Image (cartoon, rainbow, N blue to C red; front, side, top):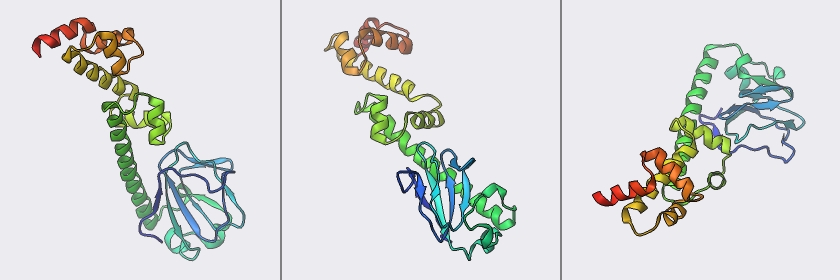
Length: 227
């Protein structure tokens, strides 16, 4: 059995119909996103035995997973399963006898899954923050497209990392950029609103008032006094 698994950050079925071809080896799958749907059941961690026909899996949105492979002859020693009980079968890890060996395996899978998921989330959060901060991307959908993630995934990452939605972070960074422009005093408020990415001046007025407690004109006057 491999010491370290293969990690797929955007796991997809091999065929367009969602099929995985027949295989002689045993595969252990641990999802880092939602559960896989296998026929009528859902599972986040399972063993797929040798199979003589394609296996159909419905992948979770923005699926990520760890994948180990081992031979049919290693199954009994590692998992305590007789080979014949795995042929053409899917076994959920939670259904296996909780032997000491399996407990260590499950603990190892859980730790590695959490560590990699945390690292993956951190990379996405930093990328998204940077895109908003340096004005590279002003559209949430555009950001999702650039990062190759769904809106739902982006929302999950921001809530987990920052405790707020990406829209709130975007609003705050947009406000800070508008404040920088106000300090220069070179542009009128409508131009500042357009440069900062607001839909119009009224939009900027609402957000600036919410973040600063002052309307843009008053805030700009104060900023220029202390500049």
